[in-house]
Length: 378
Image 1 (cartoon, rainbow, N blue to C red):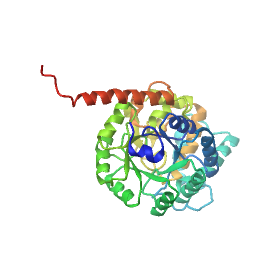
Image 2 (cartoon, one colour):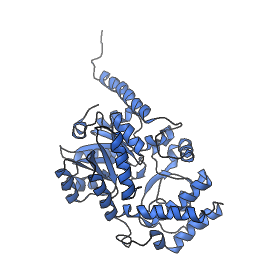
Image 3 (spheres, rainbow, N blue to C red):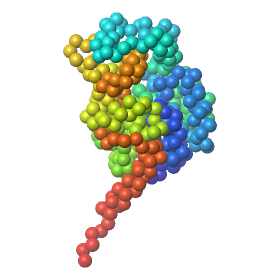
Image 4 (cartoon, one colour):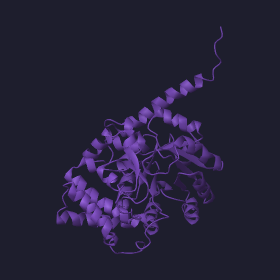
């Protein structure tokens, strides 16, 4: 299981792990894959701490950082030091308060509410282009970071050229072939073809359809990674058959003991069915595949207010999530996850997931090879 992208990034197998958890990034990379840290949840100061922690434990291997460079966001927030929460319209604020108080989910104590407010204020810049640039500057101070990935949209060509000058690669997530054309023209090296099955910000095209259509518009020097619904070795074999050079996985790591999920979140994860991973705007104001909850569904009812643009909607979600977590209300608990949740029922480990990937891939590869053997006619 070795493709050209392995040589470019120095990994043994083309299994890319997206995670907000530094432990997952390190364990996947030390197991031969390539870990990519999702940076949007961290302020620049926090990101610096996370990358230093990874650097100290990853050995001589390299890893990546995923940033969110939004093309559609609330412009009044950009460069504005005022607290985002103060910009949230009263109608949306009242809707969330009535939803939570009506469910008996109490307000946070004053000191805890201030702590939550301060944490969000420290990271609110990450959902604006300026915030993404700050995170990129942090990543560039760490030589072991060899890949920067744009989670939303086409990265600026100037950024791609800057990375190339430092012998780094640029990646970008993509949900439509036309977006891949724009990313190709910007000089992106790796396109993550993310099908609708994936968790997080997704489009509506399935992985099976999307991957070959992305491969068709890429130049020979580019690499395509299949994303969305990848949780088994046979999925990796299928990705290769579709023309991809590797796979990009996210949800599968949430069920490991190394993941950042709380016990309540893991319980929600393991009880979820594939059809419970739905596309909603409750979290960011943009379409996110996340686990269905009473909170996510409240925004889908008649009379619900309009979703806000990032990062205003993020502010509503973030503060509501703190109250839901403190109350232990699993029925209101919702977070990004893909459709593979229906196959995840108990906690495992990163090493076990990697081993399962490789063993099943080897088994299915042998089966595929046997299909090409001449039948025994004697």
